[in-house]
Length: 317
Image (cartoon, rainbow, N blue to C red; front, top):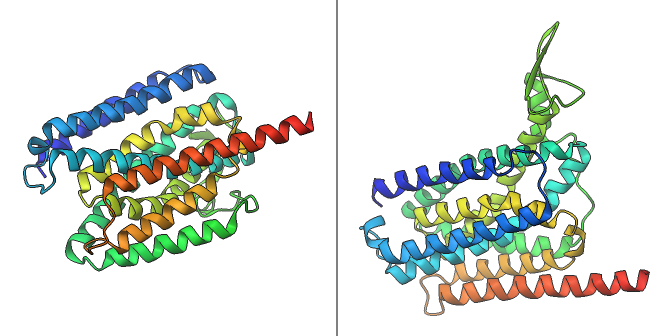
């Protein structure tokens, strides 16, 4: 992989995050605005797929992938990460509720949390790619882990709400800082007569960042079943995280309606686990098939969820 491709994408990533931060500078995002930006980020991912298709040999001269294989792997990985990251939105809503986060601060918190998660994910991707390059058998450990996670998610269904008020990120912040009782706009630290205090804003950002990494422990092994090209894995993660903020504000009031989403994610994780087990065998599942399965699973889950909850609302009325 050429250094230029990483450098060029690093610059593009900074510009995209700056643009995302700029468009939410007012602190309040309407559903219409969030929907338009969600479509924009998805379209941008597809444009980047086209760029990979046209210029893959220049981006990765040592890769064994053809242009078509690289483009298909990227978009499959992107849609996989996007679908798995939707589960994060439920957690974001729960965290905002438990920590009583003012609406005007939520866009900034999501941005800071996602940027923090991006750096942590980059580290995980680097470690995962190195391990797979040196020890191919780790792929099968990832596969078993994904099958177990999918089975666990299937069994859990709609589990009880988790309490984040005493989670590890909260304990870590409280161990090193005194924490103020109230939010102080966008400030993470304030000063009183005794010295510096962390604000609840820092606590929430820490919770969101590290919680996202816990989700990444599922999604990153899953995307390595699609491709082991570290550049494609990283770029797919970046684009999936980029649109997550806007998507949250689109779906914020509809999250409770996606009753079949966890079932779909459990199926996808199980399917990817099986795909990973079959890598290198005569029964290996092509990436294009994986792409179709992911799209079909999420489409059916969302459609069935909206149909079911619409019927329930109609009966209640």
